[in-house]
Image (cartoon, rainbow, N blue to C red; front, side, top):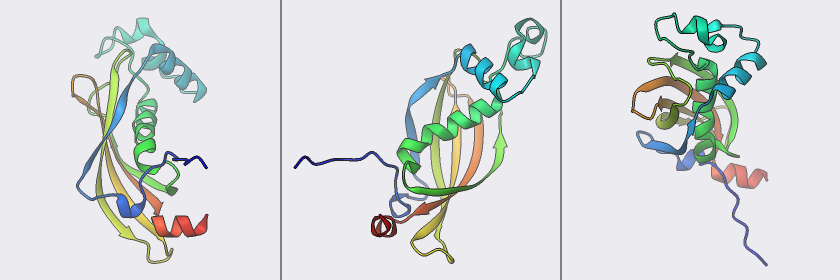
Length: 161
């Protein structure tokens, strides 16, 4: 019989507070990403769509849609942290975009587990708080977000399957 190894994130018990998880590879963002995401979400902000007008604004060019940046930053963490081990995303707080992300930039994300506790009402599950930091290729912080998730413990998830 062939042994099968399934890719997954980490269980509640495997996540360590204070550890930085670096998510690789980075994601180079494109004009197509920006226009598609912006129009799919019905965001008509000219800062994302109108190159001529944006060139007259303080940053001198179009900016990546911040919701695309946030979504990609969280998405980059999934394979390493929550793929198949998350029950639910409970919330996002403290979302900031301290520096713009531009077409052609590469987004790199790292996550620090800032808190974890077993659920008092859901045996075999735990609440994990993560601080996601997105940086461009030059190391400038382009996004920050605190994310809280409900996660499986390994024993409970294995028993449930």
